[in-house]
Length: 306
Image (tube, rainbow, N blue to C red; front, side, top):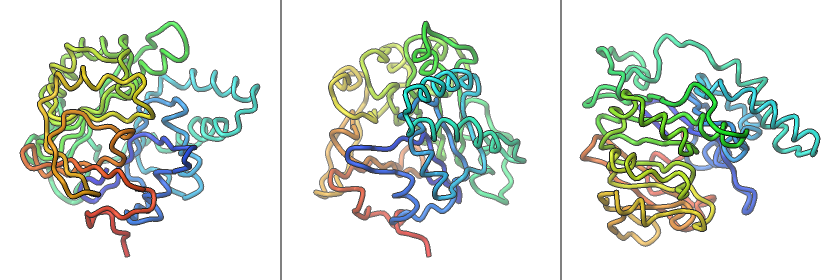
């Protein structure tokens, strides 16, 4: 995400087949991201941190880090198991997560929850805990459980997912990590969180849009125009259920130059998904189903900086 003059990365997944590193593409192709001002890791399951080795290789260490610190013990357990099974890819990422990223848990003078953060030098009035000032600035707020919820390591890690709310001059997007029902219930009991995520424009569905994480009451409360699935396959996703709760939005197809009304878009079915927002009424979603790993996006924001 580019917010004002800041580059923000939410989770660090990567593809093995076909091989694709989002961080490498952002750094070396047309986007020109040469540093990460704010790294958000919803939770440290492998599919959310497996591009950390590329972050290390490219020297893209973040200035600020947000992650569920309560997950440290669970990652240590997974790392011990990975060493026994000689899973080298996970070992490198998990060790980097545990031993290096600690350096970036700092306390900056201005936090990303303040709209002044994304526009250095600009003075901002007091910001609200429920998602920032509606009519100016870009803010980032986080919600989630503080205790482990679940019967095993997998469930506990998923339910520790940090919910990220992005507010861009009134346009709001909420990304819910891999929350399962236990973590979703925690969010539903958090009045600040529920106030912040009510009637947002875009929902990035929990747990890749799987049925096991669909909560009709929560999605109805969020009342999104558009739902996004970050998914590998459609085998376990429930686009029909999310579609019943979404209002719909016009989506632009960059490869065919067509507009279509959609309620749910997914990386599996639609390829690259981009959001451009000026405020709650002036925003658009764009999809590109071609070879986005090597193709240039139509926006000048994706042209490499000089």
